[in-house]
Image (cartoon, rainbow, N blue to C red; front, side):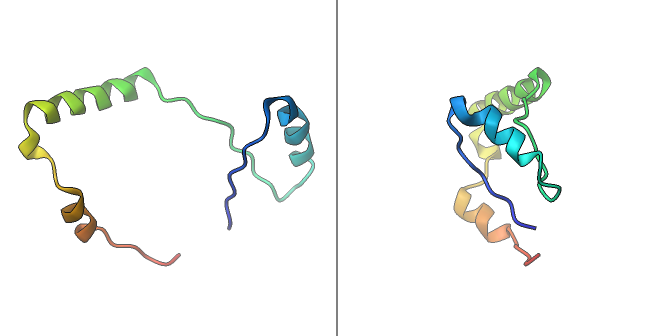
Length: 71
C-alpha cells in the first residue's frame, strides 16, 4: 500500500475532501492531536536528559543499532 501526503490550500480543502470521499479505495486519516499527557511525558524526558546527558545515546551509535526490513 502506498501513502501520499498532500498540501491543500485552506480554501480548497473542503472540496478536495468531498472529492476523495467518493473513492472507495482511499482511506482518510485526519490530523491527530497530541494529548497533554503525551506532551507531559516528552517534557519530563527532556528535563531528565538535560539533568543527566549521559543517559543519551549519540545518533551515530543509535543508527548502527537500527535495522530495516523490506515490507
